[in-house]
Structures are given as C-alpha cells and as structure tokens.
Image (cartoon, one colour):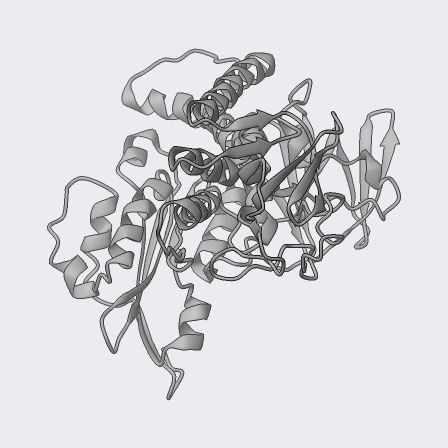
Length: 463
C-alpha cells in the first residue's frame, strides 16, 4: 500500500523562490502548503531590494532638484521628511505582502504563518501551534540573514540592513562596515539624503567581485559625492557616547556616528530547523548542498535560493522555484542555467554588469579585446553635473563573441538587462557593430565603439 501524505509539497519559507515554487505547484494540481514565520515576500520584498530601491529613488531627488536649475527650473529650497518616506515605503510593502498571499491562496496553497521545523525527512512540526503534518517532498527556501560582528567590544550596538528600513529618524552620521552590494547601496542612499557617510572595509577595494574598471569608477564617483571610504582597516570597537556612537578601528581611526551599519555578508538560514538532524549535508557556510535539480543529500528534501548559497539574487531563486515545481508536478526536466546572470548595484551612480570580468576572462581565454569608453551623458551637459558613464565590452578575439558587458551610470541596470539577452544569444562584436544606433541615447555608445581601447594576448601578456 502506497504511503499517504498530507501534502505533495511543503515549502519552508515564503520568500520569492518559495512562493513561486508553491504557487506553480498548486496550479499544476499538487496539494501544497507553505510556512513562513515572518511576512510573506521574503528578504527582497520585505527587507531588501524592493524597499532599498524605493529609498534609492528618494535619495536621487536631491540630484534632480539641483540639475533642474540648469534646465530653467527654480525649485526653491526643497525639504525632506524621513517619516513620510518610511510610511509610504511601508504601505507599498504591505500591498506586496498581501498580493503574495492572495496569489498563494488563489493557487490553492495552504499558508501557515508559523515557524516550520523538520521532524523527519517527511514530517514537519509547526512550532507555534505544535501541529505536525507530512509531505512527500519538502522544499527548504528559508533564505539568509545579515551577519553581525558581535565579537568586538560594543558589537551589539551595531545594526544590520534589516533595521535600516525602520530607523526612527534619518541619521546625521553613519558608518557602514563593508563594501559589497548592501554597503555601497546604503552609502548612496544615506549620502543622497544628506547624512555624513563613511565606509570602512578590511580589503583594499570596494565591490571585489566586480570588474576592476567598475570598482575604480564607482569608488571615484562615491568619493566625489563626499562619501569617505577607508579601506584596508577593520572595526575594533564601538562605544556609546553622549553624542551617539564612537567607532574605533584597528588602524587607529575614531569615527563618530549615529548608527554603525554592519554590511559584512549574509549567512543561510539553516540553523534550528532540523536539517542537520534529518541528515541534510551543509557546506562550511551552513548552506544546503544541492545538485543540479536542487536535491539535498536526503531524498525528498530540496533547497533553492539563498539557503543553497549559489547566486544569491531574487530572480535566481524565482527561476529555481519554477524549475522545482515544473520538475515535480509539470512533467519537465529543467536544469537552471546559472551562467550569464546579470547583476546590478543600485548605488549612486548605478551599476549593471553581465558576463565575465576582465580578471575572469584573462583566466579562461588566450586573446581578448577590450572596448571601453567614458563620457558625460547628454543629461549632464546643461546641469553642469560632472558625473560620467563608463561602458566596457570584453570580447574573445578568437571568436568575436562578447564575454562581458560592464556599465556604470544612470539606468545602467536597465541597459544591462537587454545586454544580458544579447549575451545569452551569443552576441558577437560584429553583430553589435552592425546594429543601428539610436540617437541621442547613452545606449548608442554600446554599438558605436569600433576600435579596441586595448588588447591582451596570453602569449605576451602585452597590452
């Protein structure tokens, strides 16, 4: 007699990936349940990219007011109200949370607003109610959480990105520890809204995974905007003073701030939910180890998104959730392609990249041509703003195929999404050159770079 279960699929975690897997599985006719102990929507919608980009929009209005004068406008003396921004942001997050829940319920998914813990490979306990249910397949989609350095004196005085969205007031001074996506984006937001902003990072460079041209251009742009960037130094302690907080570094610096934001990476949410007890193998960072079909070491337990720590981006988690649903209940055999994934940094200015960096290309190819240009966009001509766009193409000289595209400047993420399509389809430099330019636009520069700015050959390593 076949074993019976309460559900065909039980999803632990209501972020973007988990919601997609649950909703699509339900539409395939499966009996599905989902448990989320916080709000449905996950990091991206509730405490990540969505509210962060809304705040980035707010920060950009200072530039818009200043730039409008050169175009004949007299905007007067604009003022900013933090409470209004936070209230409107919260209203939008409430709307999205409700929309996610409606979508699940419309697909027939049972939603438990509770914390789920594995009791065995096919049994889940809902911690709040104590109820236990069974499922043929369990999908772990619990995401990750921001790291804090509580090992230093006063480390508990720091905050994470989660708290940044709910500060009672706009800080006048903020120290941001770290120099990755989150650090650079919040530095742009805080600086744009008028806060004295400092970045502290142990490495000698910001945005280490990015192309060297992007790293250098972004640091220069941030420093030009008045963001202090202190590299090659570490936080040693934080103490509370009558004037707020005082952070001291190992290099001997003392930095006064109203808040110290730790933006030093994230850790998968795998502790305390029964994974180890069920025999699920984790890597050294606590992520669930999975195969190409998202299967863990235990049959019937799968994992997607940040908890598997491959490419920690919302669209990747969504695509993985779709694949799980289609493979389990849609009669398909989908393997998600993790190559050619576009990345964006919604800083000020913005960054959009896809494909290989210069360092990666040199490691894998013998002959490369680089097409790189920097220019002042037309929008800045009348405003007088001295902020430039950088566009860089990396081309395999042997095949003419474009290996990477890297852009820094306003709307760079919008441009890179379309370039990601071109690269996925195998675009060549000749194909780009044959494309008619659209004038006057920033994007036309992509199709008008004819001569390499430099070349590299492994035989001579000469440029």
